[in-house]
Image (tube, rainbow, N blue to C red; front, top):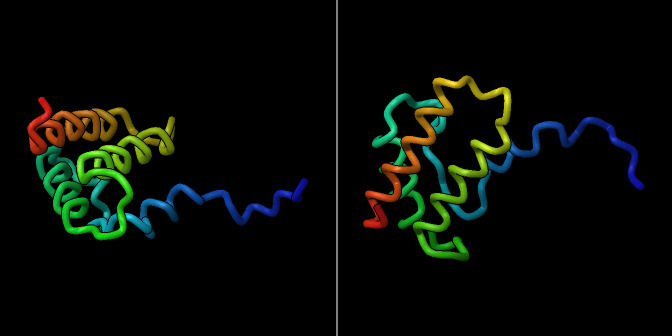
Length: 96
């Protein structure tokens, strides 16, 4: 088993910043407007030619990934905004 050297401690941050499937707007997950976050993720997913699933799946997966990986480090107020962004994303894709 490989020795842990600390180099992978921020791997989830690297995924969100350098996603191979989506080109995300800078700091999109720190914004305080759920509709703006959803619109940005939708735009990124729809314009991507590298995603494996549907645009909806890619956008929702990235948002869910971020919320889950941030865990307890994510302030409750920002978690609420991101959970609302999930609802906005569903609406934007006609899945509400």
